[in-house]
Image (cartoon, rainbow, N blue to C red; front, side):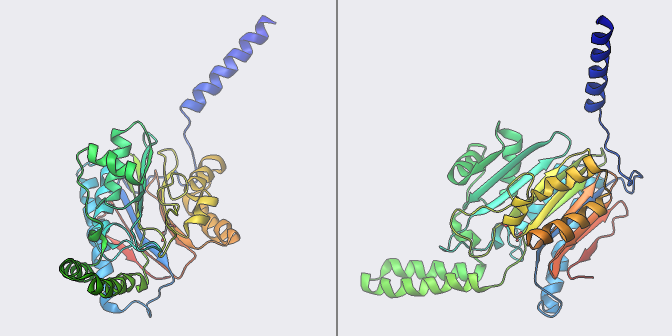
Length: 355
Ligand code: ASP
């Protein structure tokens, strides 16, 4: 009897120790690169015919700037979390993408932005949803991760939290494109000076400017995954959400496990596309689970998730992923996805269409 107890004790100890030090092994075991960074700027139904060459050049330039910035951070020994935040900020500050200043509007002509970030070393995360006055939601998500006991804040509460941490809010006019914002501001000033009757007419015009922005076909949720010199993975995603979304609708981007996930043991993932399907498929975590429990390679898991599981659900979109060995995966079932990566060699690779 005693021997049995000792044996069970020893076995339990063995399982406990091996599970604590668990190393996930896939067929990709060889280290490919010391540092790596992958980005996306959204997936959608665009082709080389629908994006004019000048516009394509603008996208390439901005994606290139983001990759080089991330590379320099990682090369200088910066952390993957830092690289992810800085790179996403660059994309949020560009009107080309549907994140930060380029965010699309809700059906009631407001802005509700989402972002999340995850540190694969500690499994710490931070996320914000439905924020309307935060210039860089990814920085807000980082603050939530680093400075709060919680992981997910919404709307006004999220804005109050970042203010309590010293971040300044912006007027929601910030999210309009420069030309439309200038016009709105001018009209608003005029309105203040005129009679009620006149105001009514101007208000009508004001709505037409707002509608102008929603007419623009917009892709471009942004995401980044990175591997630093210490072997730490991180992931982040930021978005204005789906164009014309219902007030209060939340997609996958701020949801850890759906739109974003990172775990040093497996991989870092950022998704883009129809968020509802990515939430239902718990896509980002599913990627990690396929590596952890099935021993799949990154490429096999990405292919299976996008081309089998997402297709079966009927969802559209794509993802970028990076594993601890520096393997890069970028996959989508739409016509195109703004994407790129950079590794040790420091040579940015950028792609937009299905090539
Ligand atoms: N996934 C985002 C959302 O559903 C949108 C996108 O990636 O285009 O909010």
